[in-house]
Image 1 (cartoon, rainbow, N blue to C red):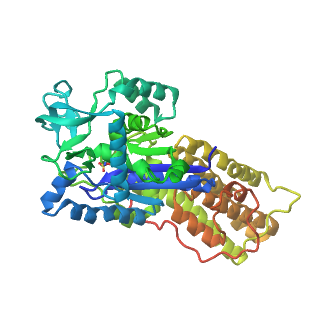
Image 2: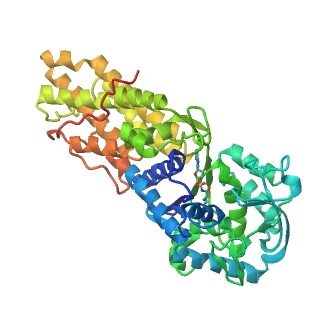
Amino acid sequence: VRNNFYLTTPLYYVNDVPHIGHSYTNVLADCIARFRRLQGRKVFFLTGTDEHGDKIARAAKAEGVDPQAFVDKIAPRFEKLWTHLGISHDDFIRTTQERHTRAVQTVLERLHKKGDIFSGDYQGYYCTPCETFWSGGQLVEGKCPDCGRSVETLEEKNWFFKLSEYQSWLIEHIQANPQFILPKSRRNEILSFLKTPLLDLCISRPRKRLTWGIEMPFDKDYVTYVWFDALINYISGCGFPENGARLKEWWPCDIQLIGKDILRHHAVIWPIMLKALDLDIPKTILAHGWWTVDGEKMSKSKGNVVDPYQVINEWGRDAYRYFLLREVPVGQDGDFSEEAIGRRYQNELGNDLGNLVNRVFSMVKRYRQGVIPGPASKSSSGSPETRSLIKDSLELPDQLEGAMAQYDFKKALEAIWRVVDTANRYVEETKPWELAKQEDAKLDEVLYTLCEVIRILAIFLGPFVPDTALKISEILGVKPPDDGSWKAKSRWGELRPKGVLGPSQILFPRKDEIG
Ligand code: MSP
C-alpha cells in the first residue's frame, strides 16, 4: 500500500457564512486526517471555497460590490472558522486562484480537442438558485425537482459535455468497486439513477447572462458552468496540470467527503470527467447526512442557522467535534440541539472521561505527592482486575483501525469509551482510598495502571478531541506520537514511573444550569 493519503472536502459556496452543516464535513475530514497521520501516513488534506457562478454574482450584487471584492471578503471567514475549530488542512484552495482557473481551462481544451465537448442548442428550463438545467419531463408540477422553486424557460446555444458516452463505463466501475460510493444506500441510489439514460451536461453559460465565471478557452462568449469548474479543484489542488510529479504523488484521492445533496455531481459527473481526461478515479466518495436544528431544516428565513462560534463558545471545540462525530452514524441525518450536545458534554465528556482523569490525577497527588508510582513487580502481572483493564486497552488500536477503515466514527468512539468505563469501574472496585490506609504496593499498582490507561487513551483520543488529548499528555509529561509509532507507544508499560504530574486542569467544567 502506498503511504500517501489524500482527502478532500467540498468547496463551500461563499454566498453564505459558514454554519454547523459546513463544519460537519470538515470535522469528519479532520478526524480522518489526524487518524491517518497517527498511523504514520503522509496526509494531504484539501479544503477551500467555491467562488464562481450565478449564486455568488447575485449575492455580490445584493451587497452592491463587485464579485471579486465579495468573495475576497467571505472566503477568509471559512479559513478563520477552520482555524478556530482546529481543522488541520494542508491547503486551502479558492476557485478564483490562478492555479485553479488555469487547470479548468486546460481540462476544457483537452476535452474539446478530444471531441467530448461539443456545441449544441439548448432548449428547456433552468433553475437559477440550483444552477441546473431541466427538461420538461423532469420538472415536478412545473417546478425545479430539487428545490421546488420556479424555473425559467431557456433557449440558447451552449457547450455540452458527453456524459452519455461514459454511462456504461460508469455503471461497470461502480459495480466493480463497492468502496467507491459509501454508504451502500447511496451507491444503490446512484445505480438506480443510472438506469435511465444520462443527458449530456451543459457546461457553459453565455456571457450575456453571466460573466462571473472562468472563460471558455475556445469560445470567449461563454463562461464555465460553476460545477464543472469547481470539481476540478480536487486535481488543481494537487499539481494538475503543470506539476505531474506532485499529481502522481497524490492522485487518485483516497477519500472525498461530501454531503448527500451533492452526490450526483461527485459520483456521476466527476468520475466521468476524470475518465475522459484519462485520470484515475477516486477510491472512495463518502456521503454524509444532513443536520437539522431542533428537528427543523436550517434556513436563513427561519433564523435557526447554527453559528459554530456560538456553540464552541458555550461548549468548547472538543465537545463540538465530539458531538458531531458521536451523535449519528456517518450516512444518517442528525439533529442538533443544545440539550443534545449538553447531554454528551455532561455524561460522556464530563462524568466519564473528565472525571476519570481528574480523580486519578488527584489521587496521585494526594497519595503519592504527584509522583507516578512504579508498576506492579515484573514477575506478577497484577490482580485480575488490573489484567482485564490492560487487556481492554491493548485491544483498542485494532478496534479503532477496524472502525476507521469503515469510517465509523461513532463505533470508534464507543470503543474508546468502553475502556473509559472499565477504568472508572476499576477505580470503584479497587477503592484506592481504602488501599491508601495500609496497602502500599497494591495502591502503587492501581495508580500506575490508571495513569497508564489514561496515557494510552490520550493517544487514541487525539484524532477526535485533539485539545483534550494534548492536555492529558501534558499533565502526564508525555509527548503524543506523531510519527506512526502509535502502536508501539500504546503498548502497556511505556509510561515511566517517577514522572511528576503537571498542574491539573479541569477538562470539562460542570455546567450546572444543564438539567
Ligand atoms: N459549492 C458546492 C460544492 C462544490 S464541491 C466541488 C456546494 N457548496 S455548499 O456550501 O452549498 O455545500 C457544501 C457542503 O456543505 C455540502 O457537502 C453540503 O452537504 C454541506 N451542508 C450544507 N448544509 C448542511 C447541513 N445542514 N447539514 C450537513 N451538511 C450540509 O454544494
